[in-house]
Image (cartoon, rainbow, N blue to C red; front, side, top):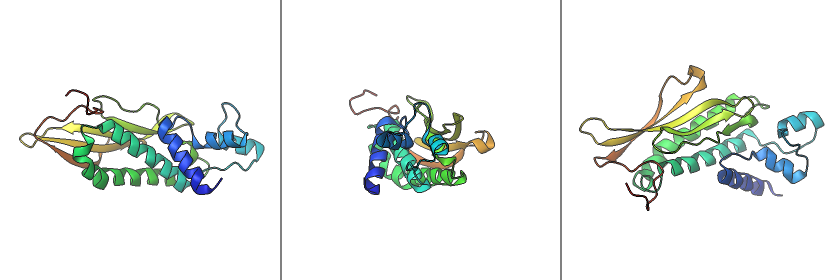
Length: 195
């Protein structure tokens, strides 16, 4: 199968499953070398097979694609269209930068364990998504959004992230996106939902 087709397939499946199926599992199933409960990287070490592990660039692209989809779903159909240009120009590039930097901080035998947590933020909570180390199930990088209402200024969405490096204590700012004076819809609202 051509490499570009494999990458497209991996991104498509990951978006649909929100990261529940790892790309390495897909390739293992394709070649028939999957062992139930064993990751591909463990398979490679045990059998010396040459299953295609994703490189860092492809792994970053995969996580970024999932991050975009989840962020859009979190904001919902009633919020996203109004602030989409700010999201595209300010928020998503910073998310992409942080995800790429995270991937490149891991060694060649560890980065394949990074994935987006299956627990995705819903409702009015701040959580958009967390990136976890699948081997330890620990959070590594957490992306959040909060609705703020400074006095006399209207509503803004504060996008920020937290890292394991500082114990998730610091709010690392991504961007404040202005909404307006009217009250925004709930996160994830569709156009058919009532306010």
